[in-house]
Image (cartoon, rainbow, N blue to C red; front, top):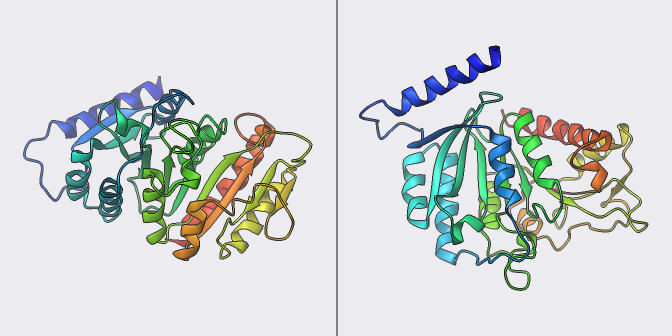
Length: 306
């Protein structure tokens, strides 16, 4: 009963604000506002991603305008962000999560079509953005999208970038955004890196004899994140996960060709590449241990940037 009353109060507050006349142009709130189940909203979107779907990346101008729009949003200038995003078929929406009451700004396609496969961005609207989680291969790397949402919901101060197409969608490797610089995903991540917002990228691997670990951690092409990477590895191992440390051992899947990692090196940004076994993402004790360790990392980043 208490939860119902809280949700009803949030509903009244949200839509009472929507009906207010003469909104000031200095109001930092986007015009569109919704009361949502954040987890359901994101996972419903990713559940529709298919390997045989069509996919075409945005062109140079579109990527530049989205990056500029994200920059304005980070600066609190939602009006200018909306002016840049709307002509591209993208919509900026202020979301209030019914479960937590936390607020997020969402950049997503305004309608079905080409832009819907470009991906989405979710950013806290309750504080400055202090960390970023990245899901480049939702569905393809099964349950990484679930882990990304879990981190966003469970830790304040964050943002989540989710690719909008299955890794094998489109022609060739067109939708493999971890290895392509012509994606909206890459443009957004780079804009966050330019703002010195640290990021962790979530991947998954199949469990077999070649990977006798629950996690493979690395800094990709970047070499400026070793302290954070070591702390994350220690946290995972303390909870019983077997970890291969890419900076001190020969590990598979170190992400050295990952283009967001290469961009992080160029921008002197903090970047961690995390590969997890099936048991370490989704549900179960190993997944809880991985999420707990990752949350510890995000807490450190959140505190450091206050």
